[in-house]
Length: 259
Image (cartoon, rainbow, N blue to C red; front, side, top):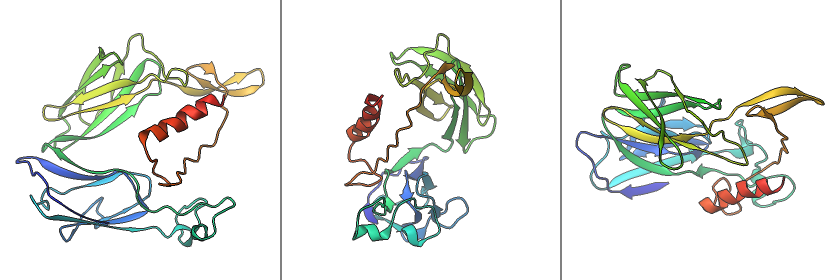
């Protein structure tokens, strides 16, 4: 992949280059230089997880050249490949799939301050509390972090404060639990003195309980029948990548109609 682009380089800010997912092994160059990630010189291996680079020192105002080389040997390699077969390109059929490779999720750049929120770890396995850890790059362990839980009406229903890298438990009074019949989600606003992000969560618990016919799954403490539908989501025009957001929603809504 090759892209030539211009970029607005903000004074005093960092610029991050994000890849949502690239299948399977990616090597990234910017302006002729190999980008570093996780101490590996420009490589990322794994087709389903996101990765990124700090490109602040390599970015120009105009004429940037981004090159992405991707290798996916499909069933000719030793990596997990499921039912993908190179032979399915010419002879589709049976239970084999056309091999998927390359960039299949969004690629974008982000301007961030010198000290920024890089990751949120959210533990939502409860019907009353959400536990959150905010990780901050470019700031010390004492960086103060504020948390705000907002319901679907835009009302703040809980607040808390803590420090970067430390787990904070936030109690949500009169919380609405998530369920397939009511997939209720809360917004989670997280801020430091220099940065702010918004995420979301749904409060729910999963467990096993003893029923009259043996062990059964419990959702939010209630016995729940799991139909176990297999949704392949293998799109004819994009394979891993759905053509639209509406297509993704259709998949979820269709399964719900099956009972």
